Amino acid sequence: MITGLWTYRSYHNETALIGDNPQAALALIFGEGVFELRAGDGSQFGGTLDMGNDYALTLRGTVEPGSTDGPIGFHIIGLGIDNTPTAGWRYDYRGVTSVAWPNAVAQIPCLLGTVIRVHPHGPSAPAGVTASFIAVRQPGGPGSAPAPQGEATP
Figure 1: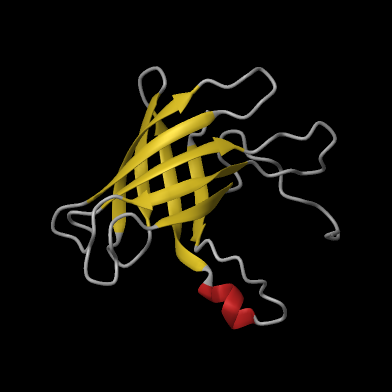
Figure 2: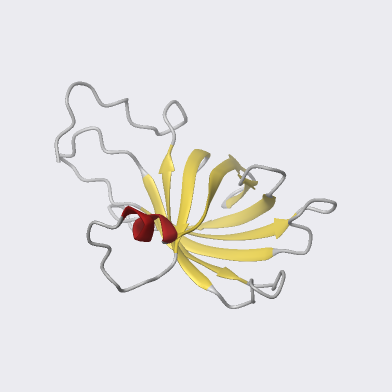
């Protein structure tokens, strides 16, 4: 299941290479926060996306069964919360779990997908804008990998 805490980042889908420009790399980030996903009935789940400073979405989603050795698909609807800066917002997410490599060393599970802004919220935030996202499972939750030990390798 995809329950637990996940560090979420979405990215503008730009084709230009970054090179050695750290500001260009930073400008690719569309949004970030923490997914908190909780199990529901059957294939249903719920949760929140907390982006800090009172920016949050309430999430409800469905897990789509995958093959025995393949990724699990999911669909999430994120709705803004009344009386907060996100009131009236709606974002839809479609994604899959990352492949679990059989010989991986300390692989951390990820959620991979795309997001679309369904409702506009202001002149610079029109409906229909899409981005790609990656959410990395935080340590200590269900299904999380142990913390890597020793030196990092490329």
